[in-house]
Length: 149
Image (tube, rainbow, N blue to C red; front, side, top):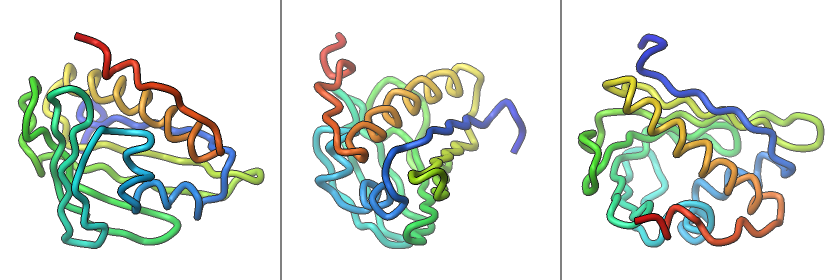
């Protein structure tokens, strides 16, 4: 792994790690911040497939599920415009209790190009922001990426 194939997103979330973690292990909660539909088996080796936005369908497998500290899953696009096959990259999310809330650190590794890094960084910043809102008890509002052509 080198710096050119990795995206790192950090965000303080005004909710306990247990609350934030639940948004990665419950289908309805996951879909409240990212996606319109999906099937998930939230256990090591379990698969997922979710329509993230419009015609972009992400697919992968859960590698590690360590409540409420860490979740790791493979990532790729089964459908959509990006050439990144399912299972070719890895997303690791760690949650650390900080100042009455949670420091979320997302590391997406194995991305093949600077363009893929830039696109995924933009996406993760967008969706982690939505996660932060809903986990803190707020409403992330409509996902404006769903309305983009």
